Length: 196
Image (tube, rainbow, N blue to C red; front, side, top):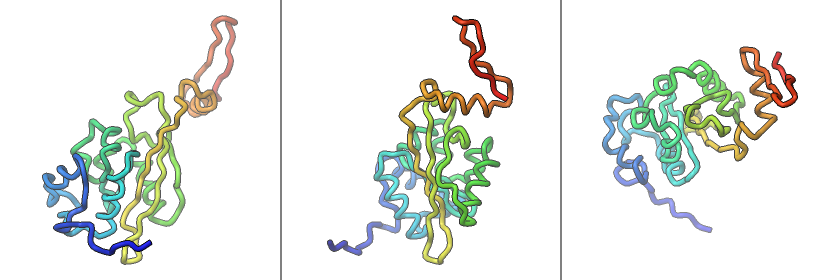
């Protein structure tokens, strides 16, 4: 199979589709640490092309500031943060969880593995909207031509079993709670489990 090596980018812009394409054109990139799209690396443009073509929620943390770029499916998960989150440093987008997120991202930059975390460890998605679904985040480094690391790819997957019907997840959450949690069987008037 032969693949053409012609450029997939016109005018040095990523070939995005949908609302992200419009946002790339209208955003004031000079106010972002990423700078103008014409200055973006080939790897970043290709990564954006790829994630935009996928229905699964995907995002990229790019550069020293871990600027967040994402596809339409991920936009739906962080709805209240869009469009301000697009191209903004992760610390500004996720201030409440920045301490945990920073450790994970910097570990990946340092070559340590953090391949999978979930919404309990890293609540990127508003809990009030998704409290019954477990989101799994797979993270992977994106190398650049200079033998360095350009960014980190985040792929989001939904666990098909909601928390409320998954006893193992419930038991784990009970054990992780910072306050006393009791499961009570009111019919038999007894405690079924207690966290430590």
